[in-house]
Length: 296
Image (cartoon, rainbow, N blue to C red; front, side, top):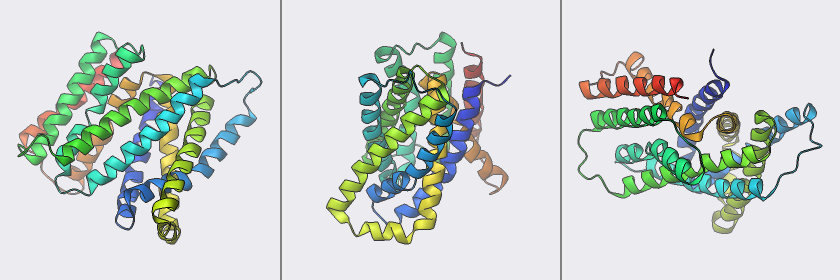
């Protein structure tokens, strides 16, 4: 029987794929920060509706959030904004492929930081699965781009920074959700709504102070913005619930299936032919994911 966290992660990666595509289009017409604001401005109403639906059937009498909820959620919200802006800047660079490889380091960073600072222990088989999956991702990236001329450049800096911020975000979201000691779905929905509200306030104030004319651009792009906001919240609900149910390192590693799905689509529908290194990387990634599902 498939574990619940796996299904939530699959929902998250599928929504993230389409949301990222929409956000790339928005980034052509506005700054990275404004494109980030869109996620929260148009996503908050959907997050509130989702929380309200769960709130009706949930006993909130014993619900008492503490600093262990509020502080991690605030820090996670800020870090997610930073990571998103770095990712959008990465998309705008020519040599973003190298940086994208560094972003994938988040699965290793999440496992290491989680084990050392968050008491999120990973089994021996889990470490094997995470390491193998990361190796597969690196091989696919090398197969696609060839040997990079420089392993450390602006693209790599953006990529590694985004990976680190994303890994810390995941761990802090899990910490905040678990501190509520309640149903995982409800805990994830409350954490999500609280975070999105904070993120909306931060990004809205920043855009108003630095370039309020971009608000008109966002309004003019309301259809695409609504799509990005909806898919962002659905995807985040998937991630947040999965983090509450399972170790962040496992969720992040399994989430790399998005990368594999993208490759398969390029092969089946766009008739792209992977080279031997890419095929080897894909095979290793599949082995890593399968090993992860068997890990205790």
